[in-house]
Amino acid sequence: MLDIKKTLTQSPKQKPDQSNLGFGKYFSDHMVTVDYSDDKGWHNAQLVPYGPLCLDPAAMVFHYGQELFEGMKAYPAADGRVLLFRPEKNAERMIRSCERMCMASLPVEDFIQCVETLVKADRDWIPTAPGTSLYLRPFVIATDAMLGVHASHTYKAVFIASPTGSYYPNGFAPIRIFVEDEYTRASRGGTGYAKCGGNYGGSLKAQEKAQELGYNQVLWLDSVEQKYVEEVGAMNMMFKIDGEIITAPLDGTILPGVTRDSCLQLLRDWGCKVSERKLSVDELISAAHSGKLEEAFGCGTAAVISPVGEICYKGEKHIINNFEIGEISQKLYDNLTGIQWGRLPDPHGWTREVK
Ligand SMILES: *Cc1c(COP(=O)(O)O)cnc(C)c1O
Image (cartoon, rainbow, N blue to C red; front, side, top):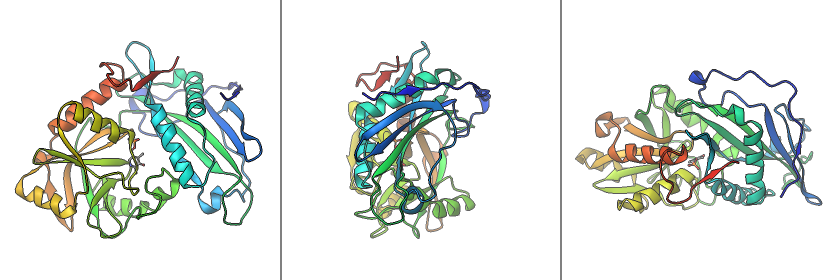
C-alpha cells in the first residue's frame, strides 16, 4: 500500500459540456504522482491539483524516450456505481512494458490504488451521458538529469483522467482502413508489445498518409516480410473469414489488448471458432474477392469495437459486409459495453467497483 498524501484543489475547473466531450481533450481537477529512486523505491505518492510537471531539461525521457503509458476507463453504471474493467490487466501490462524498457514498475496493487484514488477524488468528473466514461491515462517517465544513454535510476509515475464521449460522434459506424506496405510499426525483437510512446511517434507518418487518402486507420503488416496482418493504430484486429474469427497471435510485435483478450473469451464462451494465428494479407484479400470475408473489426479500450467497412491494399478497395456493422461486431459491442457499464451480468468477474 502506498501512503498517498492528498492536496485537493482550491479552484475546481468548470466541467465541459457532456454532449461534446470528444476524446482526450479535457482533464479533471487532480492527478496522482509517485516518484521512484533506486534507493527509496516508490515514494512520495501524492494526489495534487492537475497541473504542469516540473522537469529538468536533461531528464532522460526527453532524449531517449524511456516512457510508457496505459489506457483504461472508469465507467458510470446506471445504478450509480463506478466500475473499472479488468484494471489488473493494465497494471500487469505496464509491468511488462516497464521490463522491456528497463524501467522501474509499480506493483499491481499500487497501480490500482493510484487509479482508484484519482477516480474517487474526481468522481464528479465522471460523465453520465450514454456511452461516456472517464478515460484514465497512467504513464511513467525517466527523470534522471543525465545525457548518457543508459537506463534511468529515477522515474515518475503519473495518473491523469479525461472525461470522454462516445468514441463515435455519428454513432457506432464502420471505418475505413488502409493497409500500409511502405512504413512498418514494430519489428521482431522490438518494442511492439510494450505501450511505449516511441511506437506511436514512429507511426504518425503512416497515419497521416492514410488520412490524406481518406482512411481512418492504418493496418500494419509485419515488418520482416510485410506479408502478415498485425493490428491498427491503437486497436487489435479481428477478421471473420468463412466462419472462422482470426486475430494475430501475441508474438511480440503487437500490443496485447485487454479488449482483444475479452473478445476472445466471449467468442469462445459463445462457441465461435476463433484462431490466434498469422493471417497473410493475400489470404485476406482473396477472401474479400471470393466473398468469404464476412466481417472485420478493431478492438480497443477507446472505441471498444470498430467495425471495418472498407479496406484498401495496393490501391485496390474492398467493401466488407456492404459497409454495414457485422453480426459479431454488434454482439461483441453490446456485450462488452453491457458489462462495462454494469447493464449486463459479469460472468467472468471483469468489473471492479470503485468504492
Ligand atoms: C492500447 C492499444 C491496443 C488496445 O489495447 P486495449 O487494452 O484493448 O485498450 C491495441 N493496439 C495498440 C497498438 C495499442 O496501443
